[in-house]
Length: 321
Ligand SMILES: Nc1ncnc2c1ncn2[C@@H]1O[C@H](COP(=O)(O)OP(=O)(O)OP(=O)(O)O)[C@@H](O)[C@H]1O
Image (cartoon, rainbow, N blue to C red; front, side, top):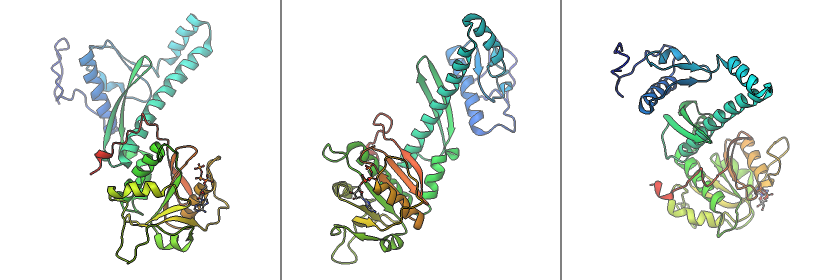
């Protein structure tokens, strides 16, 4: 580690770490501090403000003030109190800073999880620079810690990752685009197919039943998606094997929906999809016609909710091989 002695001419390059990360620092913390140092040099910043549990010793080599606003909150409170003569205002300001930061961080985490679930990015560290109102937020996020990513990994123990991602991708397409301008609701029941078939029956003739046993339409082949989207308008649900074989469409789930709690306003298809995941090892992905949402159920519970805001989730079909 290079020691910096000449403060007027900092011998710091992008390749030179200028602080000793303490043993307790995690990788995200180290990267974030490094980025702050780079940003200070790039912008010629006059001070660094930190908020929350950050070890400011990491910035001692910088020859500008490093101010931990968590520590001096009472001073800010006093100053603002004098100016505004209204103590409640600062509480609102500090709450809103915290809310804004939380919102920015969770926005980045959600976006990262969606991109991961679609297979567009791997699992690693993501960095976000978010502009909001009059400020930017720098967010460094470890996908390993992302709860949604952890759930996706759980799901991928029951069905192949390719199958789970294909169904999620297709579901987001259905939720965003619908069919010929009409909103569409449907559900995909993935994995544990023997048990699921046992606990369900055909409502209509199965369009995916071939003449011989070797007939296979697989959801992992993109060329099959158009016909799946067409059949999504049928009553009932799709049954998909853990490897992506579409076993059935227009299937009715014979389930006991008692003791299953789903969000108010959702209909019977969501309820029965959640129920089948309680009774089997299957995973259900349900698209709401009324809400335009995509929900994943596992073990009888909703584990992922995606509200596909077209501006957040940009689905580029060409990204998929
Ligand atoms: N047990 C079931 N198994 C399979 N499909 C079902 C079952 N019960 C209802 N459905 C399907 O759900 C459709 C009714 O959808 P409903 O609007 O009640 O629920 P939803 O899709 O959960 O709600 P949303 O309005 O949010 O889309 C029916 O047309 C039927 O095809």
